Image (cartoon, rainbow, N blue to C red; front, side):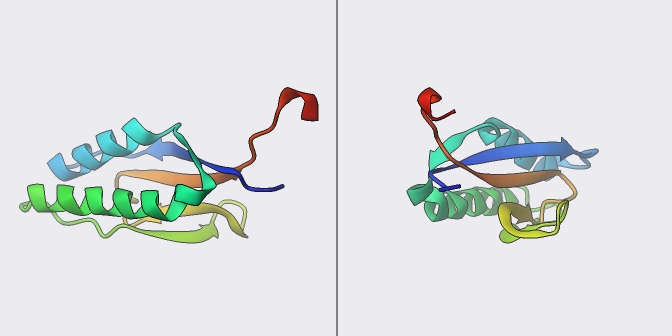
Length: 107
């Protein structure tokens, strides 16, 4: 498979305990299901981390979250199949999946 795009997906969420977790959940929910071109992946990852850090600053009374991305898919134990947003496990499981855009004639 030639990776041409990446899909953002929030697969599950947990009981949210404070305003920060609720704000991060709403943000990640708003971008879940989005598809981006592969060339923009690093830029978008940086924007996601920046947004969560901004939410940390807005909710100073809450225990801060420490977001970062890994390239290890814990569910299948395959390296580089998806990128997982770590540091937000109290909020949700959020992954970026590789995908390939195909024309219907390619099937």
